[in-house]
Length: 358
Figure (cartoon, rainbow, N blue to C red):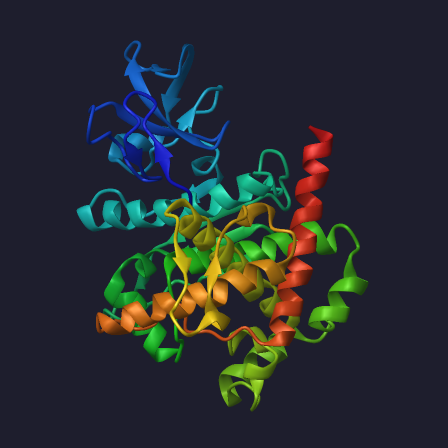
């Protein structure tokens, strides 16, 4: 995620800021140009862009509860991210509102990437059968008081995410129970959206041959593969070919995991570039790196990985110095880099198609 500047005073501002700390202008993100903007009130509902006083915008309807800071300039009440939501957390309690705020923050980070590449994201009005829609599900409480956790998953564009995952304690308990090295809300959004992207860019375009050459045959029984994974664990040596143990379950999960990691890497590298970060450890030139290119328009996954590995090593070392777990506890083996290269081509080709069609 890149840094932004206030249109009014040039103060550095961030993607989630609501107000400029220097000039106090209200701030909002406009998906039309993928930028944060300083605003001036025009009337009860509309705001003017400081950079273009002739342009009127409104805040997303979810701004009222401080859920969202995105802007709209069309007939929609909701921004381009929030209009994909069908079920949202319970807003009758402070905990419910806090959960929704955290989930919305992760969702907007996801949509920033989708919009940067102009990847397909039709909603259910545009694509009633397979459009992208989100249900944020509450856990069920049975009569005896037992809690039945809601399930996170994807089915034909419908992404369900357990609302309780927005609670740090609940998410950490789930991570420990499932023996995962890493678990975040943003990771859930990126992984499950990876399944949707597979539908749109592989299945619906009949791209099976190239996919199977890299990830394997997705026609293998998914239910049986999942059952075997939870009953017996991942196959020994899975680290040689997969980014995570869960990726080894089935080619669908492998694709979704790699898609999530591709977004992790690209978005974090853009952040590093915005801050001018460079890794140049004395006496260790082999792990020196500088992000001197646009990660969203990298020429290859290899270029991304060459910058990412040194950066992630440095970030992990800093985390350990603070007594914190590694931010990126994963190893990018050669087969995984090949999968990331496939994803890079898939995403960049789709982005180029959209640019040519515009």
